[in-house]
Length: 93
Length: 419
Ligand SMILES: Cc1cc2nc3c(=O)[nH]c(=O)nc-3n(C[C@H](O)[C@H](O)[C@H](O)COP(=O)(O)OP(=O)(O)OC[C@H]3O[C@@H](n4cnc5c(N)ncnc54)[C@H](O)[C@@H]3O)c2cc1C
Ligand SMILES: [Zn+2]
Image 1 (cartoon, rainbow over the protein chains, first blue to last red):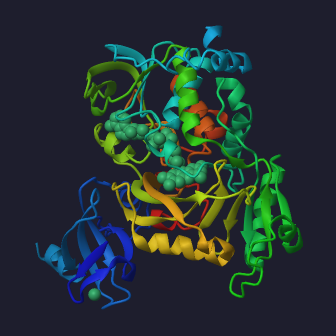
Image 2: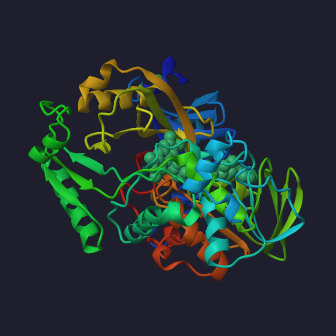
């Protein structure tokens, strides 16, 4: 599997580390009190068979965090964006 | 009935008749319109559940529906290791129950599953690891499970061909469970299927579940590629695909699907007696009865339903193998494959009711669920029959995540790729 990094171009998967589902959003209440929103965030996953938005860190390259859209059935990479840009776009909307 | 019981006499009879009298091991059942209990998933766990439901809990109208063929899932893809050398309270009694069921399995189901208690040795390479294994061994022995701590001299006597001169990963000793070993994985599926079938269970192959019917908050049936079937209770045992099947009922699970690869070499003369695991990385190896080395390591570590892996893990497995026993460097790899597994958020399984009445879950077996097959079947059958957890499975609840009562054997938290 190869991931086309936004900054570095096409690189082997062994240059990256995986940090899972990029669609989860950390609750903003600080977490002092256990809530359903927190256990959802920490433990529950959609786990789709198909396109999946996920976080990858390009540790052996530009050291950016990326949001990679990958088909979990075929390993085909459908899109790559800087995690920062994704977060800014989300906050703006 | 007794005519199709396997025995030394049936073998002899067939030897003399040119093997012409064998009948199919189970009926090719067509779906009926309704069952008391339907198990979704004809893997080892689903079939074992059906067998114990019929044999121990007297359940009558039971069906197992399988989208492919019996034994085509992880039950036929794993590296066949069975053991009960766990540490934590939720796991220890459960896996030991499984070990005991393995010990009587072949008599229970009248099938040769080639259960072979050839021993499982976990090597350690540092003082800290030694301490961890001392603790694990003590925890096992306190609960009546066999465990033996070996020093380097003892390991050397047992396995002279390991690399004891490795400067980075010196072998200091190992924790041995002699009762651990291997079992023939396909035979486990076939044996349970045959035994369940003989007790009247319908095993329905090529029948994919495509929907779960819910009426007034209760699961009452399934849609399949072979029509709709009503059910009193529905048990999901769909290793690797649990999230997808549970989603048919609108449930989200604490599970990610990941690929685990396995490897088999060309056949060699016997030289590895038992199962050996390398403690400094994730690598384990045994030798099959046909002579092939069977080995594996870590999961690929990102969500996947692809049933195939990628190079980095293959390299990592081979490097670990070479660090442990350099002599396998010239052995040719014959086959390798991947299986899709449920990775639960604490690395431990889930056997529980779901928030939907009539719908039950057996999932999250991660990469260690083959050894669990008998106990998983027994506990799930108990739950389905009695609506309460089996005594050895009381901690494997679905709500343990929300309650903070996780069974985190590896201590890495909710990170399936690190388990
Ligand atoms: C490479 C590899 C090595 C492993 N090594 C070991 C080991 O050495 N020791 C160990 O203890 N464990 C090991 N495991 C883990 C173990 O194999 C699994 O945890 C265990 O087999 C899972 O339970 P099962 O046998 O019921 O699963 P499966 O055999 O996968 O059964 C699940 C079944 O559900 C069916 N299904 C899915 N969706 C549907 C649907 N919609 N409708 C109908 N049916 C459906 C599937 O077709 C499948 O047959 C390994 C796994 C892999 C992949
Ligand atoms: Zn980069």
